[in-house]
Image (cartoon, rainbow, N blue to C red; front, top):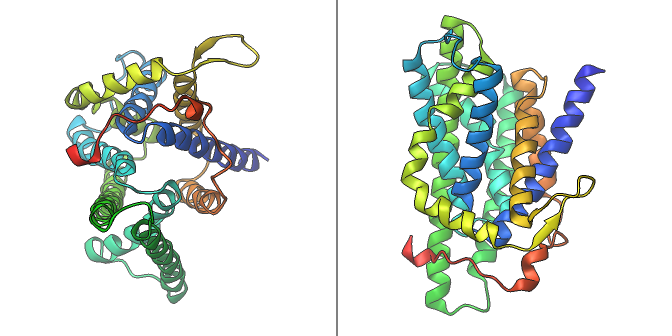
Length: 300
């Protein structure tokens, strides 16, 4: 019963997280940095209070190992969210990220010299084929935009291609981080909540490099249409409401009481099934305002 509840929380949390992330990205495609910062800050504050006991609890794993994981984790999170700026559609973004098991298997064979059964190789091949088909169809959709001239179409396609490279890099880096984390857990024991806290708290100073972009989008969020939260009567800009719900739902997913491999498979499956649903019915209330994203892709 407890596991069934956990799976249900992962399902509802992941679907809700995707919906509100698309509402954010659809209105402001360049908002990846502020979304990442908000997620990191929330989890770091929660971990500082409940896991680190306001800094009084010493870490079971030496900080130097966390610094290595943090460098990988920060890079993966920023690159994944920044890929939304590069003409990557949200369904393709989710399907591509669901290929983590593929990357983990490939790096496991190369680095850890692991061997797998034929059935696992077959399963991974089928998943790889699905991701390839989705990527190919997305490429055709980008290349066939009738409203663009040939030069502009090529420009858009090249940015999309750069987005695919970014997603591939993030996928491999994430798999490498998982292997590194696995070796650390074998040496010092598994401390998942401690790792969650340090992986989100230590990178926070790195967001100073992104401060101008984060501040610019915070101003844009504050200028959005007022929204009254049902049930509590609190009124706040609707983009901040989207961001708060996105952060909370992601936190509930990663805090779910599931074994690591089951949680990864559940989230991966949910993302693939959610990506298959039509997203056109999700309309942002800000659409009627006609506000455009001030970030120009040519200036990136």
